[in-house]
Amino acid sequence: MDTQARTRRFEPLLSPAKGLSRRLTADEQGQALYETALVLFLFLVMMIGIVMFGPLVYTRLAVDAASYDCVTSAVEAVSSENQGYYQGRVAASRTLQGFRLNPSRTTVHIWTNGSWGRGARMVCQVSYDLRLSGLPGVALFFPGSDAVIDSQTALAVETFKSQW
Amino acid sequence: MKTQAKTKKRRKFPGEQGQVLFQTALFLPLLFILIGLVVDGGLMFANYRRAQVAADTAAHAASHCVSREVFYTSNQVVLAWEQAVYNAHDYGSYNSHGQVIIQRIVVGPNWVRVEGEALLPTVFMRFVGIPELRVRVAGEAYPAYGIDYEWQ
Image (cartoon, rainbow over all chains, first blue to last red; front, side, top):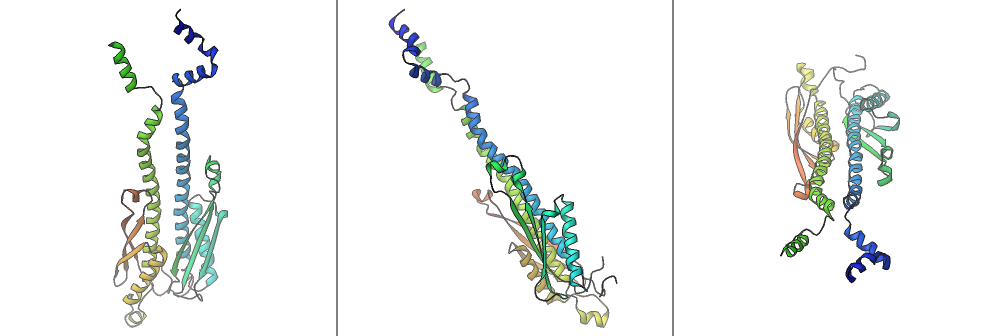
């Protein structure tokens, strides 16, 4: 055995740190696994972001539809302000139920600009408390992601009640 | 000779380190494009629905403007043009938060049609020079006259 071969053979024993370092850099086993783990973290954050985005858009569509239905029902009451408010609340609640959203997380505000009367502007605001933190992984990567989504729609109180 | 070629090959392909990173860098732009389309598509659809609500309410508000004079004298339901146009603009801009430009209001004898253009802002597509998309929206409504009280 020549000197070089002997040195190579006993290198780990002579210098453990040097041997380990060489083994780590030379051995490529598990390299892909290591890199995948790095990349997977980025993908995970992106995927959770997309998972969060779906309910956000869905709820916004639902809340928009609810405020529109609320105001179109509320303005149909031509003889009583309270009747209009009642109709509006019921319509908003039914619309949200149709979207499979929880009406107990909803706040409906209906008001009239100035005094109530035919042709007066009536505004309906529907707010929904969206709890995104219940989705898997969202609370971990996006803390404080719960949001209130609201929509406001205005319409004039019917001058004469429509026939429908 | 053989050793030289081997060394050259090794220099060209030094190892398998960074393979996944390389592949990720290759496919990451594609993934970003897909995510961008998903996000922009969702947001644009939500904004389009809002614009449609604005057009519908504009037409609805315009349809309230029945000319009483014409009705009392001839028993016909005819819209008062000026008031109908004013109402359509007023409610259209209020409900769209300025995202709908009302372009045309056609008032017929007993119907009203509001046409407009919705400006749908983008998030990711603005990086490729598309800051917003313009989509046409239209709403129609029909006036009613004669029902004065509930349960009538």
